[in-house]
Amino acid sequence: MRLPWAIAGLTLALAGCGSTAEPNRLDLTTPGVHTGDPVPSATATPEASGTATPTATPEGKPVTSAEKRVIKGWSDTLRSGRVARAARYFSVPSRVSDAQLGDLFLGTPGEIEKFNRDLECATKLVRTRRGAEGFVVGIFMQTERKGQKSCGVNKGLPTAVAFQIRKEHIQQWVRIDLSEADPTPTPTPSASATPTATVS
Image (cartoon, rainbow, N blue to C red; front, side, top):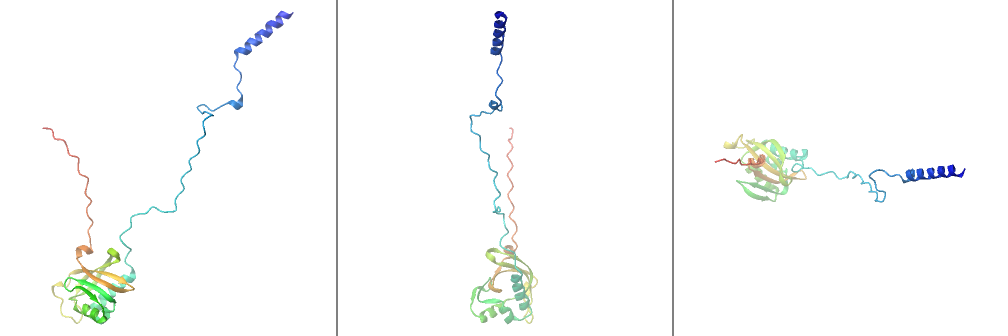
């Protein structure tokens, strides 16, 4: 009676040795992941900076209505023949520069009035634009001044003056060349073509 039980026990033991033990669920790992390696930390998404990226800005600020009012007021007043009143648009002292009159420092109201009276032609403002170093460039059409002798061959021709306006008065008056008043963009050089090899 003992032999059948012994054979049955041996069979169960052999069966247990050939089988693979079921793994513990707690020991399961994801394929390709080594549990011994450190877990990489997540990279934080960069936050948007409050400072905007600087962009190219046009030269200087636009001409203000106050600056244009001073320039137009001076031009219109002088053209109407009111020389003394036109001189009041200048600050005391002020500086002027003209090819005919040269560079002048005007330190008194009388000197400023004489400068305005000696101008060969009066002017009519056509347009303005912002120039370098805060100056305002005015483009004018030259005209005769009321009560003045003819301004000659310059009548009807354009001219340009750069103004520095301070506290609604002309502090500097500089006659400039028209090519400086309306600068043209410099052409951007194109990329040179790659030379083609010549077969001899």
